[in-house]
Image: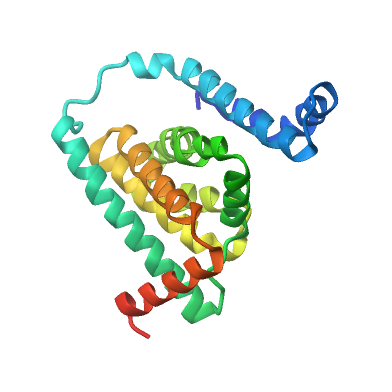
Length: 234
């Protein structure tokens, strides 16, 4: 792995934990509540993290694309197909979690994101736009890409998808996160364009955030369970 890739990963880790230091500073220096300080620093740190990562990846962006990489029409087509695949993978894995393992569909991670977004709508830019870019660069471009150079697609996709799932901090929903990560890896290899899994990841997150923004979480959970029963039976 190149030094540049290591710096990208280190920058991402620093961004994730920077709130431990700088959120309290915002609270002390500015007329903000503790909650506002944490939220505002999260927004600032993700924007700064994105700028740093894109700067570090600038040499990659200057490289010409591979000859068989998808072009405009292919990017659009595979983004649409990929979105359908990702939602199907999510639905199937969520149903397996519920039917086989008895795991409820509620996600504390998603609930926390939505609670913060409802209180501070500007926070929406993180899960909808910034986080997908950073996560696809790190988990698909770098981690999956480096594993794929040394192993085959199945091994690289599974390992990177598991890491992607673990990093979200909800081990009970590892199957859901990993299934989406596997789809994103497939799209990256199929199109040879990191922009495709980025678009699909963005579209998924944006759809979920907008769908839940003005809906009661319990009502949404009931609707999802009914939809799963219709599609997958039971």
